Amino acid sequence: MSTESSTGPRLSLDTRAARNLATTTKTRPQMQAITSRWLLRRLPWVDVRGGTYRVNRRLTHRVGRGRVSVVLNGADDVRIIPETLSELPPLRGFDDLEMLRAIASTFAPREFQAGDVIAESGAPITETYIVARGRLDRLATGAYGDTQLLGVITDGEHLGDEALAQESPHWSCTVRAATAGTILVSPWQEFQRLFDGSPALREHVERYLEETRRPVNRRGEAAVAIASGHVGEPVIDGTFVDYDLHPREYELSVTQSVLRIHTRVADLYNDPMSQLEQQLRLTVHEIREREEWELLNNREFGLLHNAEYGQRISTWSGPPTPDDLDDLISMRRKTRLLLAHPKAIAAFFRECNKRGLVPGSADVDGHEIPAWRGVPIFPCGKIPISEHHTTSILAMRTGEEDQGVVGLYQTGLPEEHEPGLNVRFMGINQQAVMSYLVSAYYSAAILVPDAIGILENVDIAAPRV
Image 1 (tube, rainbow, N blue to C red):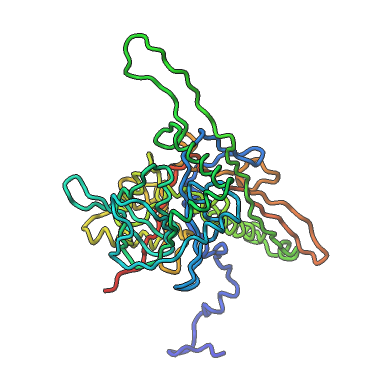
Image 2 (image 1 turned 120 degrees about the vertical axis):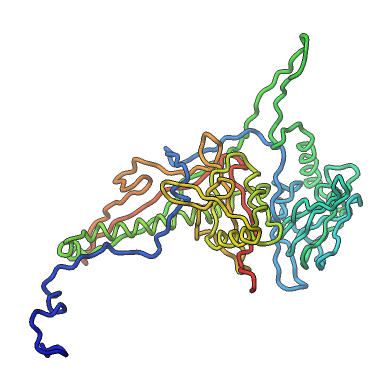
């Protein structure tokens, strides 16, 4: 190798050669998958002794409305999954699969186009509808004669089943198609035929109707008799607060991994950084990332799947507008945080720009976080985006004191490395490889239904320029 430069002989040691004798300044191993994990950081965590957390609630008489699942195999093959008909309030808890299949067979698909009127306000209810795909608007005439949009109905939602609780059922509002789509239609006389021929179905529906007639508060909980505004000495009714006899219990879930390190690496290559420490640090980060994903997406306890359908609303027009977030926040008291995919936050900012609005910000632990109405909007890339470029935005009230959402873990684990996470040595095999079992135990609980709400069908696609 020549020691001469382009201007003549080199007068000192080349820097490339000097590096062979120098000690480099190194960083710790870096990892692209590490995120801010705001959900884990903002949830209040409850120490669950015994591994199970029971949520006791007042007895509720009002049956919630779920969503029916529909299989779309083409324009002419649209079918209901019979088991999901139990999401209809009159059929909640009904487990006769043969009868559910018979009820499902009464539904036939019907196509509709944008602008079609599905139901007219004041007309008698003669059919039950389940939306297979598309969007319907609920419209009513306001006090001054203008048309008001009361809400939207989207995939899996249903209407017309409320006629069971009415003697002379009529549509309370007009239902008009906002987009083209498909609904499944069942005539009431078909259900009446099955109802008359099945003692089990008749008994179940009559029990449901009896429940709907019981006095309840505005949340559907068993009413408590209270006297107020009286004078003199009237007899005051006695009362008690009834409890749910079958409260939900949450068992801690687990995420685990076995970390393997060769003893030669651990013995010889620990200066200036411990190989075990760095390997363990990155493994814990990966487990925590998976933990946050599970808290959102796990079908058993994940927040996206366990929020009640009564706390889910759809966007008015597709993109997330200030009006949509106002509706979402107003559904509960003390909304502490909003959680959204970064692309959903960007879509919301676009809508604010169109209106000339500037979203505020909130200082959270020294971080400047975008906010709306004073509620911080935290980014979370683990909220899924559908193939149609739609996603969801979550709003939460947190903490046991406020009957909100809480995270669950257990502290004091054997060989605990972090709260709720332990690292246990498993031994050395015949190939001289050490093994460590890394385990994280966690779950999440929604104490009352309105602790969490979800804005669904959030369109994040950027508009064409």
